[in-house]
Image 1 (cartoon, rainbow, N blue to C red):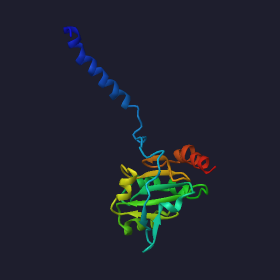
Image 2: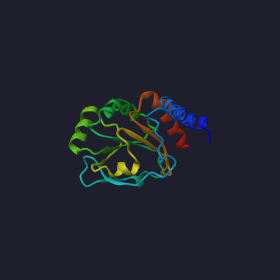
Image 3: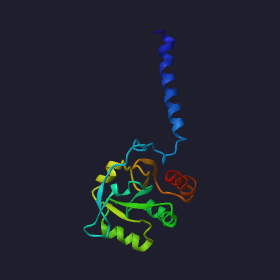
Image 4: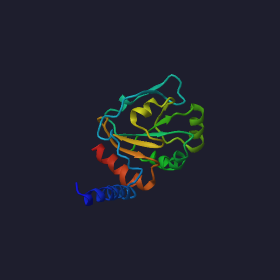
Length: 177
């Protein structure tokens, strides 16, 4: 290799790295690609919040389009999202189920009693194993699951009204056809 090429090689590598970093400035951190989108949702069987002895199995949802919202009482962003979930619960096309993540039943029940319960049912994931299967990075996260049990969309972070009406509701209606 010539001296010129050897001296320009570090400079070229520097510009390549800077290019990747610059591109990263324009990526949305809420759109972390999930390897589960397009794949079957992990199956689970979990206790139901505030219903001693009752279990909820994700298998029960086969044939339905539904959303699984992973949340916790200790999560500030979940509280920010909660009013949107309350609005969402009034939309007949949307079947919203909750997964209380790494939380105590008492604290979760307290939040739902105070702020309202938007969920058809809340399953509990006290040890976080279901969250691990779903690839939960942090709460809130929401998964849109189709009639075949395949994850079609994953929202990382709070759902906004805009996201609900421009993306989630149209996807739900399309999947219900």
